[in-house]
Amino acid sequence: MLSIIVPTYNEENSILDLLIHLSDAIGPSDELLVVDGGSSDKTIGIVEENGFTCLKSPRKGRAAQMNFGAKKSTGEVLYFVHADTFPPATFRYDIKEALTQGYESGCYRYRFDRNHPLLKINAYCTRFDRLMCRGGDQTLFIKRDLFDELGGFREDFMIMEDYDLIQKIQSRAGFRIIPKNATVSARKYDNNGYFRVNFANLVIFMMYFAGLSQETMVHAYKNLIIHPKFD
Image (cartoon, rainbow, N blue to C red; front, side, top):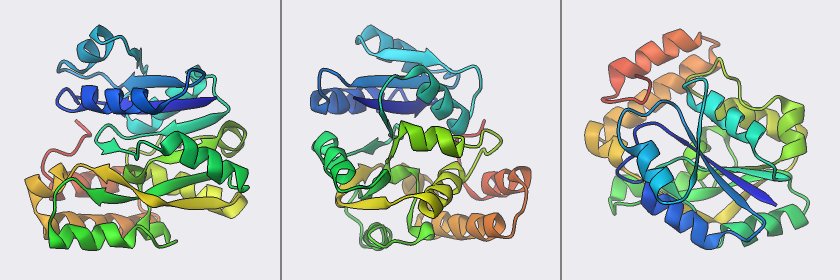
């Protein structure tokens, strides 16, 4: 059984399309859970009015929301999908195949929903097995036992929570980069510009590997990126 967990915060414009996409691809024994972090828009209403399950996380923050969803879920395999990311419709079978091959966790490559040559460079890099080429926008599947063993996502992380967990996974188990593309929204690049976003990402990576605090990284990111999802 696969448990799909979608953390949300003010995602009224895209959440229904994503949930329909996901629900069309899952099996009868799978579950689909939205975990909301206190949306002030119509996200919760849209989810519930269309018959989907929406959990209200006691804590805001993607790491805390995903952990809460994992705790409330029942599947043997957890699949974390960001609200602006559409995995291939074959994700259920792709994950099953990876598990059959002996992998305990993994992700997809990605492409953007806008055809821009510079964005294609970023997308191309996601095929490489390097931590800097990873990220939550590629989705993440993981066996529940491994997730629990590693302690899940660090809830004191407001940023880089996916990288922290992937580092732990890769030091412990096989990690599969499925050679298909998830489709991710280019909205951050539309709002900020290609070079600004990539500069911000580079700065945060350098700060993360230098061991700087979450507060320092979040403050820097807010100064670099328009409308970051921290507020």
